[in-house]
Image 1 (tube, protein in one colour):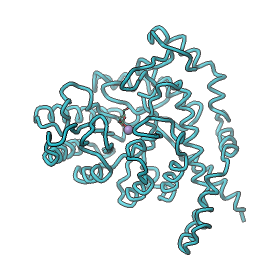
Image 2 (tube, rainbow, N blue to C red):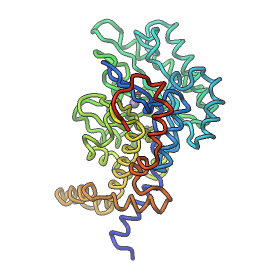
Image 3 (tube, rainbow, N blue to C red):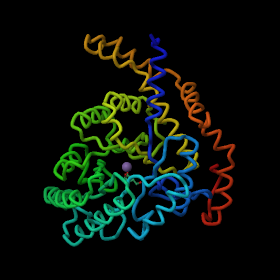
Image 4 (spheres, rainbow, N blue to C red):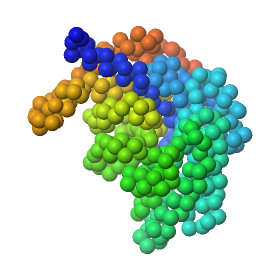
Length: 397
Ligand code: PSV
Ligand code: MN
């Protein structure tokens, strides 16, 4: 009979073997705050460089074989750019992941995209969504990931009700264009860029819109898109219960949508979310898209991405340590302190030695950040890219 420790370690290895987290292409390029941009000499300025950086993260962590693409940032030519992306997939060994339409940056979208009062502008947004479905189909990508930035800034200036109906129409038409292997993920966010009302502000609105669009539409939870104190793991449990959890955009936050490194502020919250996921069946789990949505303004981008993947793996491993059978008994008996201790003991355990062992057994570097530093990759891309990132300040290596 295996001991408790052996069983726990087996659970961790299985969890690490199944854990995959997608990288955001936009996490490798120069991005900033509303007030300015700190340009980094090593930042990617082409989609090829983004694939190259993502491949480096995957080579060192073994957990990130796909890259999320934002259509207008990565495929400005639309479907005609698909062959170039396929060539990059082959060259770098990482695949295109979720396809993210851009419905937020064009001047036409000042008053909204799919919820804009103008039917011409809604049509323009729909055309972009249908092009994005086509791109996803051509790339064999499963998820069309929608973030709708629509909303208003001043009370009384828009009909909230009319806008619901307009969104329903566009989402239903987009859903009808999906092929049998495609899904639509609907992301929500309470505010920003709009500061009075956002058309898809919370998981209830996202869920209802997804349901009305059709069975291939699911909800996407971005951990940075909640009000302070929201119990995100409860939302996750509900969405799992309803078969409506499509995926995550992981990041951490202290105040709003801060794009801080996953687990840097509240690792216990990520652990609690992963615990809910590990309670789900293996089939349910594999249908959940784990994605990182962080864009670092100050940290070196490749380094920050590796740090994030490693943190995610460690927190997933901790959640796998929970003795779920024992916990269920303790919950049933309302043994409050014992149940909480059973849960917390897993969180407090240092899983780094076990994760290191797993990496070595899988032919990966024991310490991916150290391996990055020793590889010379950052120095190489800094040399190659510096001239295109003129004005870069400081050292981010
Ligand atoms: C919006 O804040 C968001 O979370 C959406 O997922 C976008 O795709 C992403 O950030 C772009 O940075
Ligand atoms: Mn997001």
